[in-house]
Length: 383
Image 1 (tube, rainbow, N blue to C red):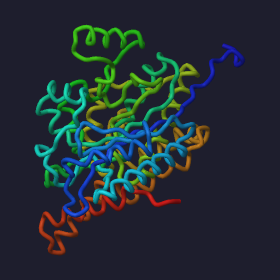
Image 2 (image 1 turned 180 degrees about the horizontal axis):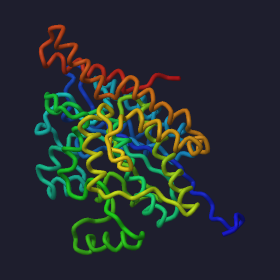
Image 3 (image 1 turned 180 degrees about the vertical axis):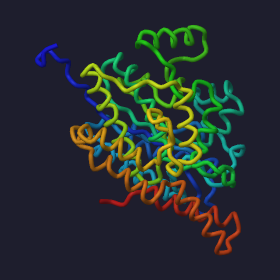
């Protein structure tokens, strides 16, 4: 095909969604039954960019469709600050962490909406213990076939993105030994994990139609894979990541994700592609990212050996350098090196807990100090 007849490049627009937990500033525990006026005020200020989540102790935000990663990041920072300001008027605070250090899931109440009532009735205990939060990144890919093709190629890199995001080392007051315990809870739901393999968008749609026609689900929003074609927007939605405590970490992961997609798109345009590996192999890296985060490396399947994460990150940054430059997010992507240097939220939470215990604090007080860190670090300062 001549250059003049080449199809236009995808938009690579960016949208980001994050879920937060609402804590009582005095007890540091989750607020079980927040006042209705809190959500009303948030909606008055933020409109459709804020929404209730399944549990009343959660709140979700989503940016508008942004042309650049930096624009999405600035909007996300504004959303966090607004939620914190409104919640503060009620003695509450949002924390950007995928699990609360000591909250109990069985004391929570789900939000009374038809969609959530149906979910609670259908999923029972599995969804009642879903006291977890995540981050989703949408990338604009206007072509259905391209979304399916790139979904299956970029799946290789999902464990690498998860490792950078980890923020869920605690569950019900216990150190889990995992940097990301959230996925252990989430994958009790059906239709989670790595995506299935399809030869075309039509094949994906036919499989989805079978499930819808059988009454198993209403639509594609009930597909909860680590990455999926969005049922609401012409985007490819990355869902594997924990919610990052530091907003700049969220933005770095978004930058890497969209840069990887552009790299894979250019390969496709040049009649090349990333080598496909089975879910069996990618799942091993998914587990390593869940268990160790960035600490113990991931498997490079081309080499057939575990490689330190810092080596893999430098390879990804090299692979995506020109694409991050083209998308205007090179600085944001290279912030991943800073995550590697200082550790993720999980590292910091565990450090604070250990130090507090070493200095004589009892377990509950040490866990409260972790919450104090999360409260302070979740809200970015005005630039």
